Amino acid sequence: MTLFLRSTERAETCAPLTRAALHAIVKDVFAGAASRLRERDDAQNARADLLEKASAHWLRHSAGSHMADQKIDLRMVRDNLGHASLATTSIYYRP
Image 1 (cartoon, rainbow, N blue to C red):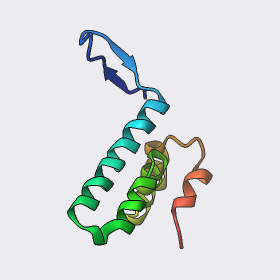
Image 2: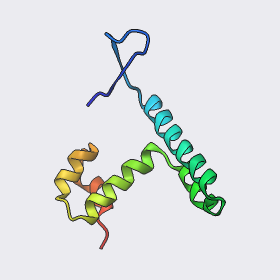
Image 3: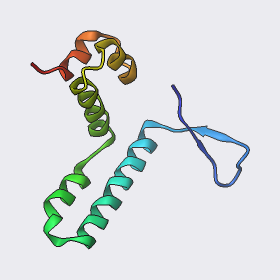
Image 4: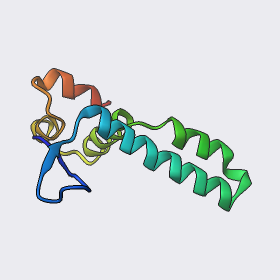
């Protein structure tokens, strides 16, 4: 699947969203959430620090773990994560 991002200068054209661009967007979202958490409550600094460390990879891994926790069929999780092998996906299923 290719994600597209609309250009703000030319709304009629779309450019593919690169992995680096997606990573930067996700990091910015988590950084903003961490900043707002700190503004709201100084006691939440440890949680805010964790948010700042979060990444697109962490988000993807969390989604896989949550699907596994909900007993979603392993093949569906594999397909959602884009894995070629069930062996790769099976790391999300803990005893």
